[in-house]
Image (cartoon, rainbow, N blue to C red; front, side):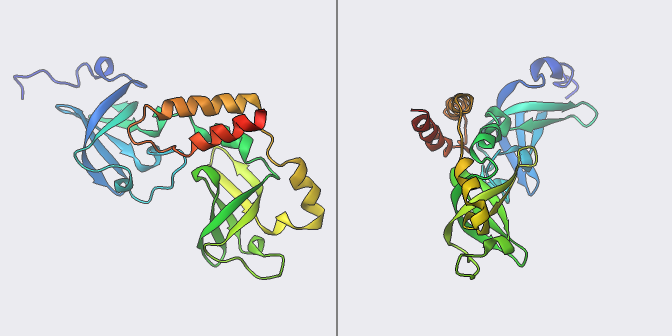
Amino acid sequence: KQLTPDPWENIDTQFPVESKHHGKVTNISDFGVFVELSDGVDGLIHISDLSWSRKINHPSEITKVGEDIEIVILEIDRDNRRLSLGHKQLEENPWEVFASVFTIGSVHQGTIIETSKRNAVVSLPYGVEGMCTQKNLTKEDGSTAKNDEALDFKILEFNKNARKIMVSHLHTFKADEASDSKSKGGAKDKSSSKAVKKINDAQEKTTLGDLDVLGDLKSKMEKGEK
């Protein structure tokens, strides 16, 4: 190998931070995807950098060994000769848009997909998931909502940075909350619509297409403007 140039000598020039490239998936582990960009140069996409909105239990849900994948260079580690890569960074952060859709007090239909003793996971529109406490699963007849039930849920908390949404079915029918849910039922402004358009434009270029559902969001919000 001493007879060939060291690919890491000009790594900053060939693979500068924030530049986009295509690579080949060489290995998949529980924590991420290893990608070869050129001979002697590879990097890791951490599982948290694969998708903005999709909950991924294992990277194999997204890609497989031997496939080509588009990436963004996030960080260069010269000492360990390793690059930190991102895939979700190819897209606009949809949570910027979701912040104007899942406003506090707005009501959306969701489906309970997982329950535990304390909480339930609720599948909301556009591939987003929310958390609901057992108390807030209480239905109007006093029973507790179960798995696979589709119900209305009110947004109690939205944390864009933590990508966390807390919801409640109980608050959708409480008398003292009724007017609040109507007044805050999802105002959508023009800036949000523009952000959706940017996301969908980028979506057409992505390799894996994680954000397909945002196409529906774009149409819905544009109709709302009219």
